[in-house]
Image (tube, rainbow, N blue to C red; front, side, top):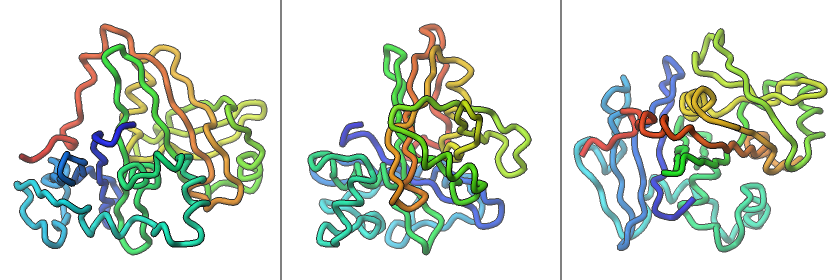
Length: 245
């Protein structure tokens, strides 16, 4: 995780509920740059953001764009220290880009979410952190199992290929006893599905459990592993991540 890794913006269609990667925010030497991605071109009913109506143009600003600034919790808010703790960020790491990437930049008034994609290094190694989704929809016994988790505990991934809402859905479960404790975020599910098939020693574990946090920040997971050397080059970027310019 570095400041200059793009933070991608995903938009959820109000009709299909599918997620589309529609943009990317990058920190540059003199400020910030925003690009639309090809996902914005292919997403039906997606409307460009105010002040950034041209999908084929890059936008540069010395200050972070209002679209993203409004998704940051003010450092003056009394709950800010607790919020940063939930995100697992140190004081030095708590920069606008890292906060947006780790928190998702969630707001209750729209269908947008921010994230960094999983990066596989030249060595084939990868490590990525994400919050488990769907905790509010778990059974009471599963929610108790979530609360009983401990940092570092091993978790397991399973394909949910009959999921009517997402053919790439990936379940997160525990062992002994086996219990579903959430889902991988939908905008990461396709990449995680691919890594499950081509990587060696892929492991998932509890990075952080916060019982007093809202459900979307309660269970932070770490997925890591190594892609076989002959498969690294085949892991191309999905088209929807590509910039339009």
